[in-house]
Length: 249
Image (cartoon, rainbow, N blue to C red; front, top):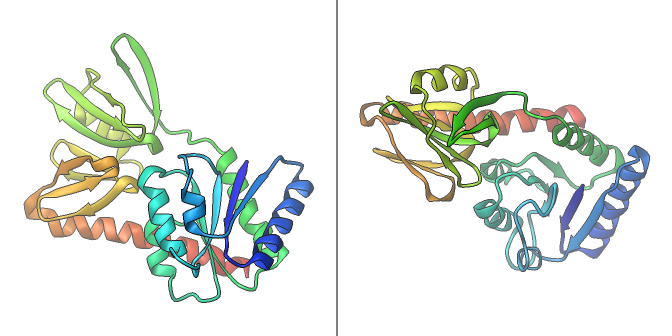
C-alpha cells in the first residue's frame, strides 16, 4: 500500500507518518508513506492510482485540501481520500469528492488505526458482482464498480468502463439492466440508459455528465426526480461516512 499525507505543518506531517508506520508494523503490512507540504507539491507529478489513500489537511497554505482533492478526482476516481481538519464545517463540501472518512484534530493513534482498519478491509475485499459478456470473441467479467454507463443499441448494448474502454456485446439491455439494478449505485436515466452514480458529475434538465466528459441523455419529464435520487445517493455516502466517524470516536 502507498499513502500520501498532504499537510503544511511539519509537526502534523511527522506525527501522522509515525502513527501510520506503527500501524503498518503492527499489521505486518508494507506501507510506503509520502509526505507533502502543499497540494501543489502533491499534484506536481501526480498519477492515477499512485496512492491507496491520501490524507488531506483541508486548511493548507495556497491551494486548500478540498480543491486539491478535486484535482485528484479529475483523473483518479479510485484513490481513497481522508480529510483532516480542526473544524467539521467543511464536511458536506468535502464529501462531494467521495471522501472515505473525515478526521478532526487533534488525532491520536486509535482514531487513525480505526480508519486504516476500514481501508485495509476495503482494498483487500474484491467486488464479487460482475457482468459477464462476450465481445470480439473475448470473454469479459466487468465488476459492477468498474462500469460507468450502459446504453441500448438495437440488438447490442454499449458498455463504458472507468478506464475509458467501450464494449458492444450482443446482449439485450433488459438482461444487463436486470443484473445491474440490483445494485443501488445504478440509476435508470431514461429507457435504455443506465448509469453508475459513483461516476456522475452533474445532472441538468436534459443530460447527465459522467466521468471523463461522457454525456448521457436523461428523461426530461423525470429530470428532477432523477437528480433527486442522485443527490440522495450522494447524501447517503456522506451520512454513512459521518456515522462511521462518530462510532469510532
